[in-house]
Length: 240
Image 1 (tube, rainbow, N blue to C red):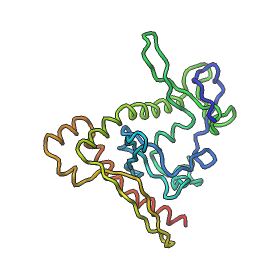
Image 2 (cartoon, rainbow, N blue to C red):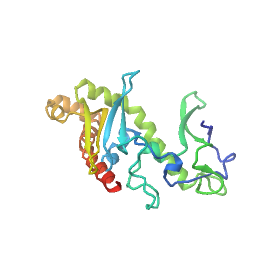
Image 3 (cartoon, rainbow, N blue to C red):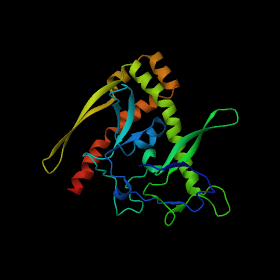
Image 4 (spheres, helix red, strand yellow):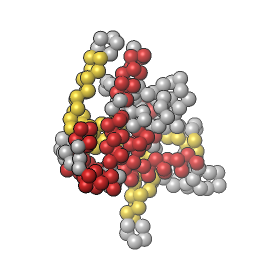
């Protein structure tokens, strides 16, 4: 169970966080939430897929990290960081940190950093210090703040993006079938993507509206990211 508290430099002056990734830290997941603010980087490494919440019927984005439950093909103990890819999804890179909110003097909700003190990466002995010796944020905490900003801004824009894609009929379901060298066949269902033919067929006004909103390049990153399914298959075949 999480023990989440507001981070501050007095109570947590000696707190450190392990920056390595591994199954022992809960990173052995086959998919992770993704946000529009990181699509450009994500599409270079991972397949970006959409999922639909069965209760709210709202879409959210994910990246595929493995082909079986609990499998993360990017974890690699031979790599210094433990993660064998240049860009790490923000929701995983944040580690034990979360976004919280508190009211300012004008009663406006302001995002602040919280930390789960019971997270396996948080401790007082090893890892990167969060605060400088004489106060102030350390470089690692500044890095975490930038990651949380990606998540915060991504959450703020994702509904508008999905509404635009839905309005134009661009989202379609996709079943992913994978044949491994071992002869094993895997089928991933319940995913959605962008229909490239429908995107190309949009009229000028529709394309302009989508582009001005900043969603047109994001649609193409989703399409291009699908080639990374082959990359995942190749990684898994090598590990067999």
